[in-house]
Image (cartoon, rainbow over all chains, first blue to last red; front, side):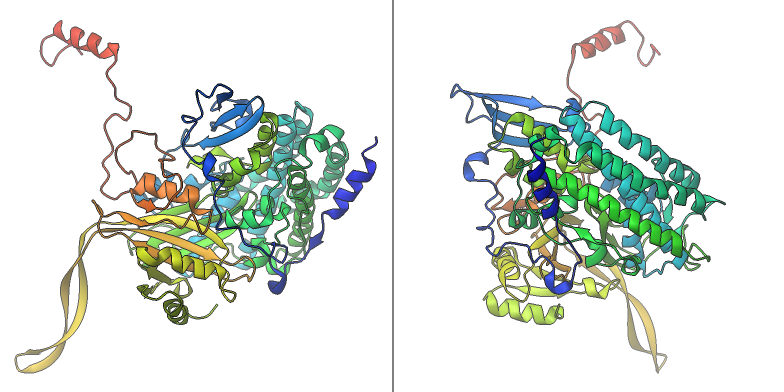
Length: 419
Length: 211
């Protein structure tokens, strides 16, 4: 292969670094976005009404049943030949007003609903909600439960990133093989979730002030075996894909997102770090017990789809490092704060915003309590939804086939986008 | 990050005429918020974003809250003369809270690593004065989230580049996240040929019958 030099340079350019408060976001470019004009006035008007009839443009409704749209997502694309002139995402096909449902029931009743947000990562959803409620009620979490949370969240991150890479390759035309490699690994993680929580995807496991039940006998050993296998899988996966000519041709230089726009548009998670902004809530907020683990935050240099792919590969390796440390350090002890009340739970009046680093970005829950048994306001800050803000900016001027790859690289789950 | 009172003073100096007040949060004291009048919200937001010692470059969360008009009953401790002896009694005072819609912004600084600073804007009422200033020109991340607040709460954002419904469909009438929202019996009712068949069928059966 001739691409050897180039790819080495690129992989080397993906620097890694620890987040220090003073250097946070140092990579953000100096100049501010010129008042963040969303994407130029010419592309702002709804749909394609104004350009239709000029003869040359074609309006295509991509989705909601297109296989590359990760569920029921639609984008209205206006094309000049194959080039994207305008792109408007259309949401709501999976909207069930999750927030209203959350405000109708008790605090605990919303916990199973959170599983259905990003159904690939139900455990981090549970944790984000529990985190917000614990902040609202001032609840402490026992040490063992914190370790269980970290282990569950990092397993979730590994399987989410592996599957995302599989989906991305699927959309670039590599039918079957990468996604099946990823799903093979995901099965092992889901088996762990099943023996821990009783469910493979809808785990409903964390509670305010701890976890629902303790680890089953032998779970730690089983988990250690799975985690010990992961580096081999990551090597194999990386060897298969990282220098793949087609992947590089389809993703390098495609969908470049500048650091300034990424910050201003609220892009979070691996997409943000691929643009070189050092902002990982595990380091910035140090929620839970993440300050006890040694891990690095991978950063990208170009902000293109290839960087987003590579960030996920590197993040999986850091997750394995965290898992090793957490599995070695997990103590015995209670798993639920004795002060936490699951039934007739009435936190004091007030409000709290809790957020954490979900695999797709910053997942936040904003709760207002009026002192009654159900939240007065229950709001989810969904990372996949807000990461789509920049979709049009990334796609305009590219070919339609690039738009598919760019969407694949953003990593969305419609359960969370539409809520 | 300095205390909110100090931020309020500095903002007041930077944006003359802005009405800013601190809204305390009894549950999480460090997440108390600042309420800004919609007329000066954009200017205040710009200062918060651009001032070197704040640099709130990242608007994480935008959401609405519906506050319908309500009669609040609050216990008040009073000293009263009872049978010639002064005693402390608890009396319930009723207070009318006018209805309004509120928009809440959670701001962080990625560069300096502090936050959240919580900004609030209020509408005058819930019926016809439902306008606040859009902060999308300052933080692009508010673009879809303000559209969502417009869709689900009915707050109109002045200066938003593309204010349309986002989760509900075009032509939907109400705002589902409002507290007094009543859901329709049939969401997608429209007359179809099927209805004529039902009417015709009903004629064949006695009133109330026909299974």
